[in-house]
Length: 592
Image 1 (tube, rainbow, N blue to C red):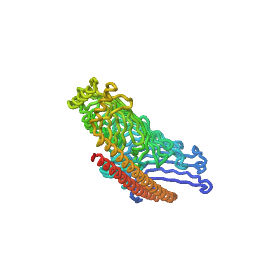
Image 2 (image 1 turned 30 degrees about the vertical axis):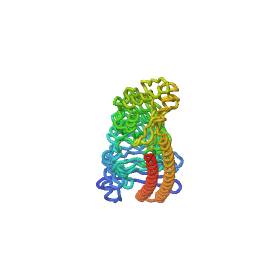
Image 3 (image 1 turned 180 degrees about the vertical axis):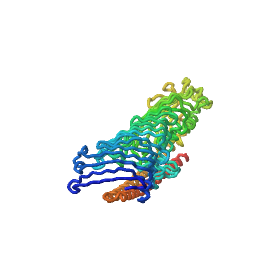
Image 4 (image 1 turned 135 degrees about the horizontal axis):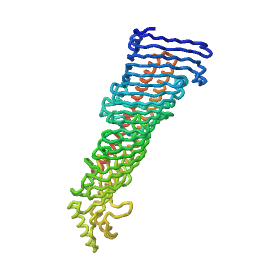
């Protein structure tokens, strides 16, 4: 036949169609997709470009059934020029050039240049093996590919996906169905969804990207070795230049259990700006909200494992891992906790906000970050800091300080001299040390920290540094100056408030669990309906199959939207209960 002036020859011979179909065929010529799309109208699809092919195949069905693939003949070449594929609900694909060569053993891809979504370009080369068993018997397909790109803009690609997956407005958040974590998303960005990795794909893939962009993440010189095998996507030896530093990464994305996809990863970050990391990565905002007010460069290592939400982001309260942070120097530009600590200890102007020689080790488990005690110095002030913080922003730290008397304010020094005089009244000669040891307990939240002196420590050492008798005398003097009734009342209010918060958290979690279960049932039912729609179209035309696929996608998207809304509403109500309990606790304490 001839289409728009381009000849195209196709042959097909079929023998013994019932007992053992024995067929041979060929396709030789050129197909003008622009002319074809005009001759055969296709809903929601726009095609253009030229395909030049010369393909021949011959064999019996029994060869496929008996896995005698070497006996099955397949050879030829396909060339593509200036192809454009536009489908409603998907980013446009433009293939400037592509070449395919077929043999029974492999299909080779060469000199493939394409654009997806507009800006993102891809250059592909490689070889795919075992493709005949994959097509006819759903066996494992193997491939070895290389990809290079000047720019990959994931945000642009995802923004052109089907309506119904668009992310909420900037003020909104997606609530994870298995926890309390939130993932803020910017306007005009489409949320990723969990993508199942097929178990019958065995690919070895090397990628090099000059510029990579997704949401706030802007990276350069991205390279990675990607392995897809047994339903797991692994990344090895990945690296990128980002935030004026570098990040190295190894990771495993495991979707064998599609209801509980898992991410395992380890990161090695060098010379990364703390505030830049806070503004770029949502996980940093949750795990280390104090980073917002810190200026300086850090080196960090982190390994973790977590479940993934349906937006492909870690479910924060399922993260378990460990890491280490080092820095030669950081400066606290904004820290309510440190400001309060300086006020409580009455530190003078000699205490700066710059810290040197940072070396912090930490673990992440059960929704909390546990920091091993570490030493740090600012000016003449020495501190040993250890404790934990929650993903709910709560703090629980002990800070052991060593403060030169010369750095304390005049009021505090007068108070200390007065204590010495009172000790002398008991007939005890006591000279206060030039360096005082004071423990401080930090509780509350990042936005409303509570800093108070903490008398006593795990080692049993005194905070005064003198003899036992003097220690007890000074301690008694301090105790007598405190309003015991107020201390007791505050402790009772703290206990009652904590009880209210715990009850609210338990009730809120019950609401989340019930919503999560209901959401899971909604998605399962939608998956069943969608699969039935696809199965029913198995023996129908390709267009009908495509229509069925679109219908199945629509069913799942609508179900996912309904399920997500259900989880969001439950999470809002749960958070409201906890906030009301916290407000009640604060009210009780404020009345003391």
